[in-house]
Amino acid sequence: MPTWELVALPSGLRVVVTPMPATQAVSVSVFVGVGSRSEPRELNGITHFLEHMVFKGTERRPDAHAIAEAIEGSGGTLNAYTNKEFTCYWNIVPFDHVETALDVAADMVLHSKLDAEEIERERTVVQQELKRNHDNPQVWAGRLVGMAVYGDQPCGWDVGGTIETVQRIERPHFLEHMERWYRAPNVVVSVAGNVEPGRVVELADRLFSDIRRGSVPPVPPYDPSVRGPRVAVDVRTVDQCSFSLGLPIFGRADPDRYALRVLNDILGAGMSSRLFREVRERRGLAYAVHSSYGLLADTGIFTISAGVDRAKLAESIQVCIGELEKLVAAPVPDEELRKAKEHAVGRFRLSLETAHAVGQRHGELLLTRGEIEEVEDVVAALEAVTAEDVQRVASRVYRAGAMHCAVVGPDLDEDELANLLAA
Image 1 (cartoon, rainbow, N blue to C red):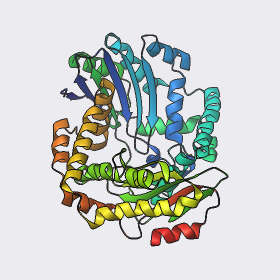
Image 2 (cartoon, helix red, strand yellow):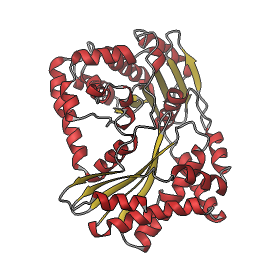
Image 3 (cartoon, helix red, strand yellow):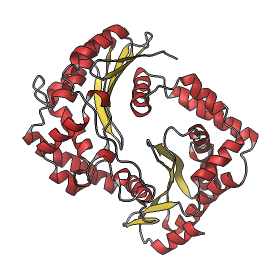
Image 4 (cartoon, rainbow, N blue to C red):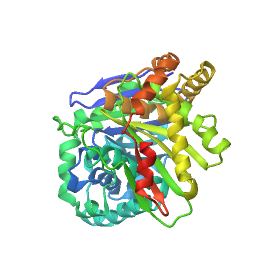
C-alpha cells in the first residue's frame, strides 16, 4: 500500500500527502472538523447549508459555473458532503492539474462570497433535499431511528436540519459559523495520487495562507442519559413497511471496532450473511435486509434495516432480533468466522483501490483520530478477531432495553412494536 507524508504547517493546518505514481489522477480533500453535532438547536442544518453555499462563488470565481468549470474543464469532478462530525470538500483531477485542484479547494473554503441572493435560492434547494429524504421511506426510517437512539441532543439531530431551522439561517450566521470552525488546526488537507509531496506542501502553504488561526470550541459530548422513544412511527399509505432497528454502541476508537466489523459481516453484510439467508432466502420476507453501523468520537449506532409487507412486519422484526440474540448466545462456528474475516479483509482492501479512496481515508483518520492507522495493522487486527471477541461484542451491542425501532408504513401500532422489543 502507498506510504504517506504528514506536514503540520506553521498555521496549524495539517497536510497529508500520499504519492501513488501508478495512477493518472490526483484527489484533493479538505476536511473541516465541524458537523451537525456542533450546531445550536435553532440553527440545526447550518453546516450542511454552508457546504452548499461554498460552491456558489468566490471573488476570483464569481459563481457556481466558474468553480465547476475550473475543475471539470480538465476532465475532473468535484463535490462535498457533511455528516455529524465533519465536512469534506473534494475534487479529482488529472495529475498535471494538481495546482488548480488545490487552488479551487482553498478558494472555495476560504473566500466564499456567501451572496445574499444565492443564499435565498439555495435555501429552497436544501429544503427540497430535506423533503426528498422525508419522502423516501427507507431513508426516513433511518433518520427516525437515529433520532430515537440519541434523543433530543446534537448527535440525534438530522444533519440537514429541518425546514424551519433552514428557513431562519441568514448570512451573518454563516459568517459566524465559519469564523468559529474554519480554522487551521481544525482543517486537514489530504492529497493522494501521482504527486510529489514537497510540491503539494509548498502549494498548500501558499494557497491556504489566508486561513484563520487559533483554536476552535469543544464539540458537545454525547449524553447517554438522553434517549428518544423506544418506538418511532410515521404512518403512510405505501405498499410496504420500512423498518430500522437501532442500538447505541461505542465510539470509533474503541478496541472492539475490529470485532464489530466482523460481527456486522456475519450478521448483515452481503448475500452470505445470516440476515440475508434467514429473512430473504429461507422465509421470503424481504427483498433487501442488512445491518450496518456508524461510529462517532464518543458513541455510535448499530442498525438492522429492511422493507416488508405490513402483514409480515412483526415476524420480520422478531427474526432480525433473533439473529442478533444468536450471536450473543453462542460463539460463531470456526468456518463461518474464517469466511467472515476473509470477507471483511477483502472488502477493506478493495475499498482502497483509488487515489480518492486513499485520500479520503487518510484525511478522515487524521482529522477524527489524530493518526493514520496503517492498512496492514487493520488487516492484522481483523484477522486476530476470535469467536469469543464476536460474542463479547454482540453482548455489548445487544443489551436489554437498549433497542429502538422506527417504522414508516401503513396501519402501524406503536404498542405492538413496543411489545416486540420487550419480548
